[in-house]
Image (cartoon, rainbow, N blue to C red; front, side, top):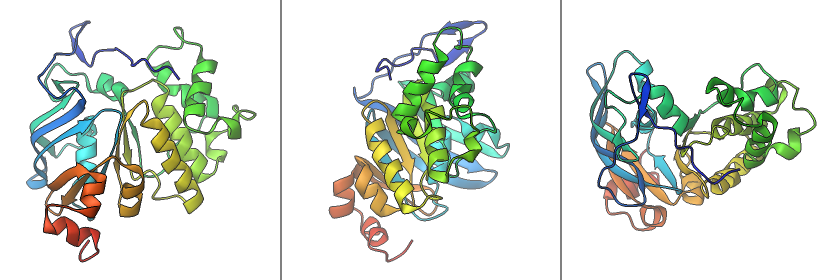
Length: 278
């Protein structure tokens, strides 16, 4: 897969694209939230979160159920826009541009920030067409060799050797673990810069989970990966940085994963990790 990132802008004004604006930030920061609040109606799901997420690293988000992890993840590529009751306050920057500015095109943003969901959701199409879907939607099927692009994505998702002889078969015929890797291939085929994963292994067996974890480590060599997981051991195994959310949408601590698990600053983090609550 090419190591060059897609330079398509995320902002559109009228019919002309506008280059992404710059903003002072650490060189390695690709995503930054500043005083971010997310509400569903009158209920606050994210409470004044500020965080800087580094590029080409794996950042894990852990915490008890209902603490806002997935809400924060969906805020990054504006998936919460699809929920009528959702409301955002504060700022969330991608490449130094506030993704909630009026001139940001959410569809173009999601081409830069791909997403993989908790349950595998392949389309009722062939394996080949599942992977090629994003390229076709973006109108790139005339600009790239689709067969080569599909092979690159499937290789990157560690699935090529298992499906290369049955690309015309339905993606729904694959096992659960294979379906999830197919969804990862579909997400990375358009060459995004960030890959969001919302508990991508929670519905899988241990062997399939291990393959997904190995794959995440490989993907982080090229992509920024942000993963929500309820599995603290998984976070400890695969992530470089860990963010700990607690009930009420509060980001309690964010640091190197080894620090979070071995020497956290906040006693509540230690209590959660050691199982005193959760």
